[in-house]
Length: 182
Image (tube, rainbow, N blue to C red):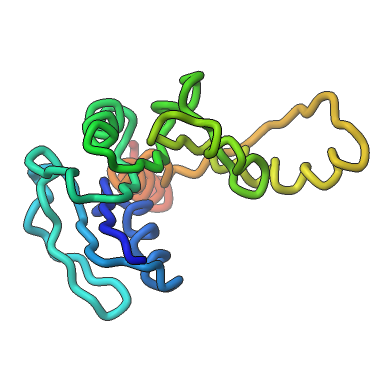
């Protein structure tokens, strides 16, 4: 079976990575729609020798979409993931929007994929990237000897804040290296 897929936030760094990963892994895609803000609608994105035209999220109808990957920020997910769910579309949300929502499963497939079966919702949240890596590493240890507490400090990548933050860091770094006030 092949699926109608949408990527919300397709022009961002994470959205582009989602696109390339789906294509590289030969995910069974019938139709693939790249979605972003009105500002980005019409832009061309190339990935794996294919060209896609970005469509406007605001006017998109999720009715024929089987699965939508969201990575356009929590505010976008809060509005449009619920619209997609109402259209019977499954949503995998990469933002923090639904992480604390008790009726939406927070899933790391290697850890708790059975939560998907229990859920009555079509939205699936995923934890922060640092949490995912840590849980995958700790699960085998926990299975042998119960872990009661983990204390963690992380350093988060600026890319998690989007292209604007990456550009700001780039300009600040240039300013420091050029000994300019920033």
